Image (cartoon, rainbow, N blue to C red; front, side):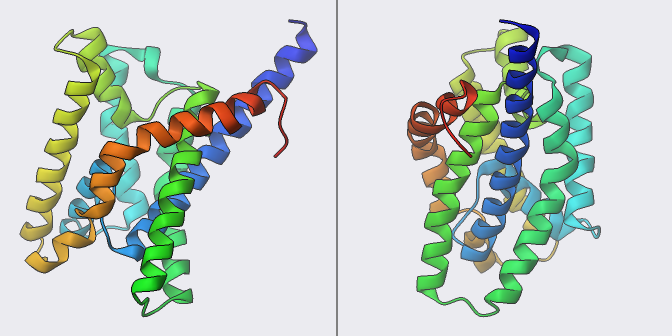
Length: 223
């Protein structure tokens, strides 16, 4: 591969990483509007958001910075440019997109919530596909399970990830209640979306990898 091709590939990887993080962030905002549950890590962040009186975007950076230090201390291999794009941008984009969606749909009905959830889920998988295929580093949350399985050899990644997801959900619920949240509000961040994310996100990401992300990375697709 010549120098020009290498630069073009690197530029595509950066663009795909940034686009993937941005799309995923907007989709998390859509999940929050749908109030049908979010992914396990966002469940933890929702609990912290209810308990800690600082803006969500800033809170997201702080939590991810702690996990980044963990990754840097035990295995820097998983840290790359996309890690920092995720760290410094995702939380603020989630905060902005959720506020914009709330302003556009101040009292969303069931149909609006269902459409928001479906579109959010599909495009979240697309964003994740772009982000993963670009291979510019993983999120700090992904790095935790990868280090525990790959570096510390505590077990297979899929089982470690299930364990960390369950811990996130339990902590999210506990912190939400500790922050004075009503029990009935738990379903807004631990619900159908959480279940679908856990069981169906992988196959849909794989589909987008083959149909969209890999062709884009190879320069055979258009934005």
